[in-house]
Length: 566
Image 1: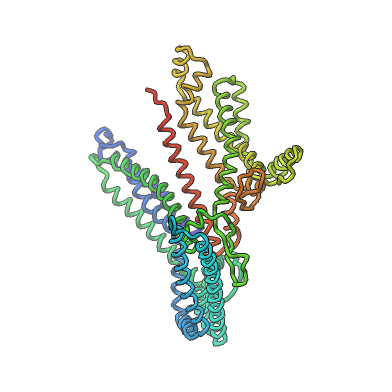
Image 2: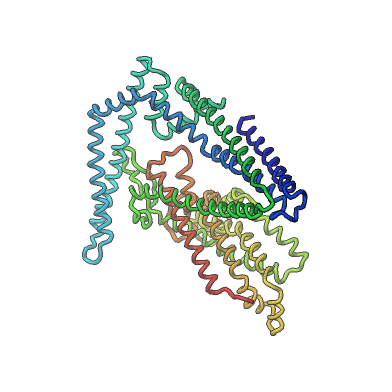
């Protein structure tokens, strides 16, 4: 058992002891006449227990969250100091290398030209009337694409040359018997970001007696430093936690008195904790938004926003060499938006009528016995794994659709189509609408039904004019939940609709969605420095904005049509 776990158990014991001490001291302060206390004895115990355990546990939680990162930074800093001499030699080699200087000059020229071309493209796109020149705009776009490809190629050449020089300095250091820690620091400092992260992860595994991806003297040296820093930091945090817990126990114990307002302090602490929980929820959302926004801005610094939002071709590839003409990279996301909208629309056409009508029947027409049986059976659809729906769409629904249209003379229907994915997805989200709408309809007061019947309305008139308007906010919420579920679905689309980014309005053709492309772009080992990978964050940001807009529209619809009753 680690020292942190032992300290946590000790703090729990101290917390329980603090409650007993606070309660006993409050009772003894009034000689057992608890009516003279401002607060009940338990509140005094809660007060002592909270200030005994809460600050110490916060310290342990902060260490658990940031401890690994801090150890990595301390290790990297020490290794960086050890590798200062090798780093100086490497920088001198870079400064004296004519090829590196030539590539850097070429990169500067290409960046200047690409920025100028991007500005010209933006100016032409915003032009109106006689200033518009579609032919010149197309030529400038082609020129800008070529410049982006040349930039990627030159950057690749620069990195290759840098790696060659780095390996040469490293080989020379090995031959001259440089210290292992200096070699480890040099490798950590001048490797690509992914290799640096892997180096630290392997050193961490070795330090904790885990299994690393490789073994080397440099990793052993880094693991030794990391083990030392981790041990020192753990001991420091453990000691501080015990001191803080004891300090809190001693201080709060001395505050216990008959007039002490323990209940006010405890309730203020509980209120602060509830407020902090709300802030954490909000800040989590803000953090997600800013992380998407930051990476998206990096993407839009390379690919113009207008090309992304209004481009009609999606082929997220960036050429690595000048001769790769076919992989120039096209980041027009309109085919993805269209595919997502088409599949979602088909799914909602299936799910909304069936789900809403089934909810009305179960809540207003069905008998108790049938309802108790039918509703759980209907909700089973929500528990079926999406991969099973994908198999069902691929092996059953897709061939059935193809066979049906072949029977009526349409032969070019594919098995993986938007119609197949939309139909199966609609079946999957029926319970989201039916179950929630049923609960909302049942929550409408019976008095409204009785009043409608008393006015001579029929059951169908009561449902249409009283119950549905009263339940509209909940029904809109269930439909929104279903739309969000359909927009975010991935597995069914991959298996039933394919992965081709086709811009089409024909539901019988293969299409893809935003979520499928995000998964494809971020699958496997990726470098988060290329437009191809960064485009996934741009897609995620667009998806977030679409969801936000749908929620705003739903709120406006509810405010406009909601019926209010006293």
